Length: 408
Ligand SMILES: C[S@@+](CC[C@H](N)C(=O)[O-])C[C@H]1O[C@@H](n2cnc3c(N)ncnc32)[C@H](O)[C@@H]1O
Image (cartoon, rainbow, N blue to C red; front, side, top):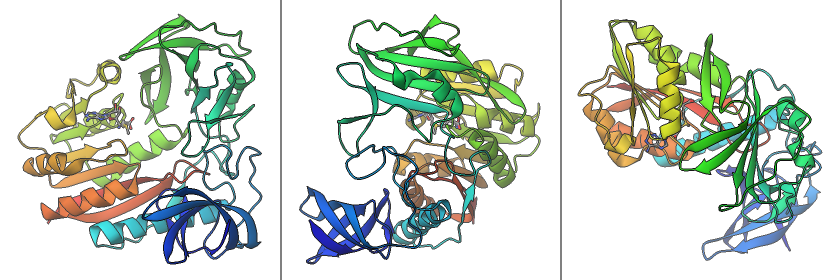
């Protein structure tokens, strides 16, 4: 146990403090607080700790709405103990700090609320539960393989909760994902090894899918594809293929990509990490029949979904493969990227620059890799022109950014 005066927020849902000259990353605390903290990890360069007693509280502190939140408990949420406006301020601080440190620029940014969850609860339309050996479902504790059993999840969408998977036993399952798509409900079960899983009878009428690995998802009941909606279109997404988890995220991000990227008739656009074709479709509609949009996606199921979702748009083409290995075109007017948390990396940044697009729209779920890639893009002559941020994951440390870079 150590007493700490808590300093500013850092990336990863922690605040920074110092103890006898050593940096301590503290969870469950807020900037300005004085806390008693329990050390949870003693590294050579820094300590990790959980605030277990608050000696001087921040005015931003609230009672966590979730009974499973707190030191040593469910690791799914990071900021249950902060008011929603404070959560958004902390996320904006993290974005500014990462850009300042990694890209040498300090952008003006506010984290905008997404419609549909005014209290920050009931938004998550896809929840992956871990399974204990006795079949009880739960969520992983922070930085741990241990499972916190839960009977409900307050950030889960009401459709997910209607499935009631947490109140059933799932022996033989490795993972159970509950999905509330715009038009469908589904449960995706991943068996442990080659074992078969007996699916308990569920209250709600939902598809039951089995993830057999290597992109193979089969329907034990109902349909393998779920219907999602965004930008006035229906997208079919297979089982646990990628789709944004906040119900209004897909629509808002699509609008933002189009508003910042301004694709015009006849233009050539590259949509990297295109998933089920959400942005590809909007971009293809904007460039029209005389334009071309190429989407690249490595996951075979998502690439197949994208092709099916874009059937009516002949100006859109999907290439299956890794972005690092695909050379879809020699020049693009606009490049849209939406990589996983690892970001683009130096090689992909260089490849994008070779295409000499006048605009790059970068959709990012990690401000650290975004800031790093923005610095590398600056080395190729691209300047950050606009940055928006969205609270697509309330109660957690995660935040989505959409950046526009233009060629100087
Ligand atoms: C954040 S999702 C974005 C999907 C889509 N833009 C959307 O908004 O629905 C990232 C996608 O990139 C794909 N992906 C991950 N690594 C990849 C790589 N190296 N090359 C191509 N696609 C990749 C994933 O399968 C996933 O569908």
